Image (spheres, rainbow, N blue to C red):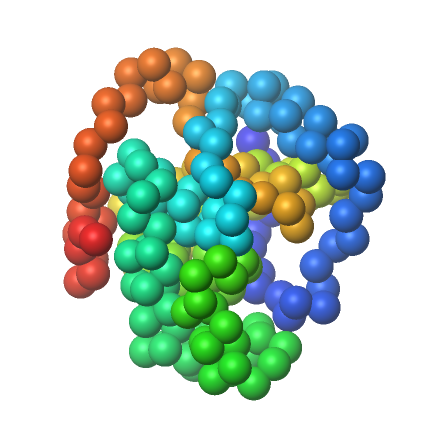
Amino acid sequence: MNAVPHTPQTDTDIPPVDDAMSDHERLLNRLRLSGFVEHEVEGDGNCQFRALSDQFYQTPEYHRDIRKQVVNQLKEHPEMYKEYIAMPYNDYLKMMVKDGEWGDHVTLQAAADLYGVKIMIVTSFKDTWYIEIIPKTEKPKRGVYLSFWAEVHYNSIVFQGDAVKVKRKKGWSSGSKNKGR
């Protein structure tokens, strides 16, 4: 796959979404062609954090912990993220700490930086179907795979052969200063 380098953008630069059904079908076709299957997570506004939890812990249940750690990363390093936010940064932080608030491209960058992972996303966008988010401060220790039905939902994805092999376990350590849950 040829990745498009990830550059955080302000919220006003999000591409428009076309017809929802054809958009979703485009995503499903790309996943099939790439050999991925989805681990579907609940669509309650926490899907990005649930999908990340599924990748780290093989369960979406630690989404609240993931959100808390990502928001702490945003609070501790505003110089890395605030230029990409189209509202006052403190208002953004107050919004992102709330359960059910949708994660965005900035929370994905913060997660990549915090956990030291490369986040690879198969999308339903017409022109940009594969995006990589690389940590800014260290070499990634592993890859995290997500699907993104543009402006609608994130899911965790695995390669088809790995879907059978995956054993659900309760922990993953990134080796960073913020280990575990």
